[in-house]
Length: 124
Image (cartoon, rainbow, N blue to C red; front, side, top):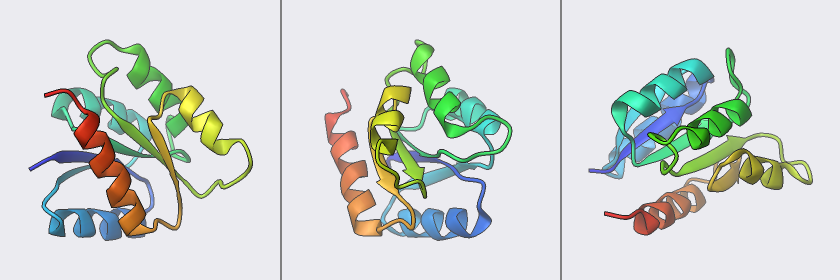
């Protein structure tokens, strides 16, 4: 059962995404701010991180940069989740270290496809 770390401060988004992912067979751990996201990424060894970019304490951009700068978490695939759908935001997320980018509101089948793609790329 692949483990996903969902870093999301919005309770409604967390609840909806975690339930839908669990129904698809994923084990989901949750962090509600950027600092907790960093800690959970290091302690829980998720196979994919879904990272909201607008987080309290430490924003998602900085969380991604720190995860990719740390040799223990560098290989963890990150999908940026953001309501910011402005030109250049995808590039900004990729430049921060995210492996993929998806917009909110989340289109669940599209997000599942991105998760599956990253899981298939991951070395065993």
